[in-house]
Image 1 (spheres, helix red, strand yellow):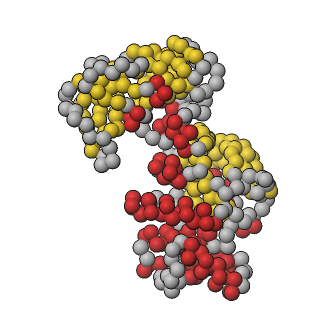
Image 2 (image 1 turned 135 degrees about the horizontal axis):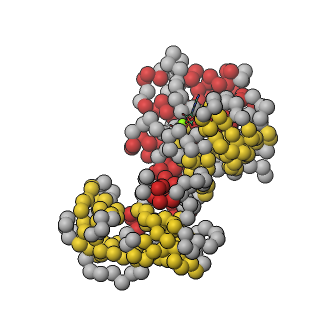
Length: 371
Ligand SMILES: Nc1ncnc2c1ncn2[C@@H]1O[C@H](COP(=O)(O)OP(=O)(O)OP(=O)(O)O)[C@@H](O)[C@H]1O
Ligand SMILES: [Mg+2]
């Protein structure tokens, strides 16, 4: 079975100076909920617009269901695209908004009626046909936009940041709705976001983008637990990062010598890294705090210098006498500001990375310390 979408060596320039896509290649399986995550300006919208057929590109190929669509116009690609700044037509009732694309494609009215009804039911807005967009809440408008996109059941749905214009609670609700609608339709969705929580929880497959390139593609938990680059590690969650040299390597198990001592961790890459300068990372929720010395491989003592309340966890900042800080996310603990504690973590939680990014020529220490 061919991939629902295959993008091969896609290159897109804007003018002379902006290389928005620098040879991007990836595949999306049929039925997948595929999420592209990356910082502002990395090329997410550019990529979707190329796939949608509304933007010309400078190199590479795009295949939809195994068919090279390089010369196929947008409306013949059997896809539906919801742009980042989608807008409902304010002068059209909800029914006509949803029917719009079908009318453009010359469906007959009885077919349109059936399809609009189905799409509105799917997004939980049956009975809203006669309303005007101005008579809906933000979340309802978002769902009408989705109904407009899923009408006529396209095989591939491209949604550009569909959840960034609504409040947090509504985002959570819509995320759940999206997952259910996707399951009911059984087609392929490609959605972009720059919010890590959305990426991790929505995606069957997650793809992390950096400026014009793909940093990593995989299951959300794979990228979170075994990132391949410092950039990917940071983009899917908070992480403490320190530089050091690898002094021992036994399979995946490595020892890294840092300014704070030697720590053991896991290296998932291939090849010999002894002697190399690497990043040693620990996620803040994987660190344990104790008032007595822990007998673990990885530990040091540090003083609690601040604590921030985040509701679901508390962020504790500890500082060593040499000024190095470590961030810990935990439930409220009986700890006191200014007191010293033992900070420790399991070797399996130590993430060792030898690449700052897939972009060549970056210095790993500069990237770790944000220089
Ligand atoms: N029409 C254009 N002309 C020139 N440069 C453009 C144009 N559109 C986008 N760019 C540039 O191309 C790069 C990628 O932009 P793009 O909109 O694809 O990013 P994005 O990942 O969607 O960002 P965001 O998260 O902010 O939506 C950026 O550097 C942007 O400034
Ligand atoms: Mg964008």
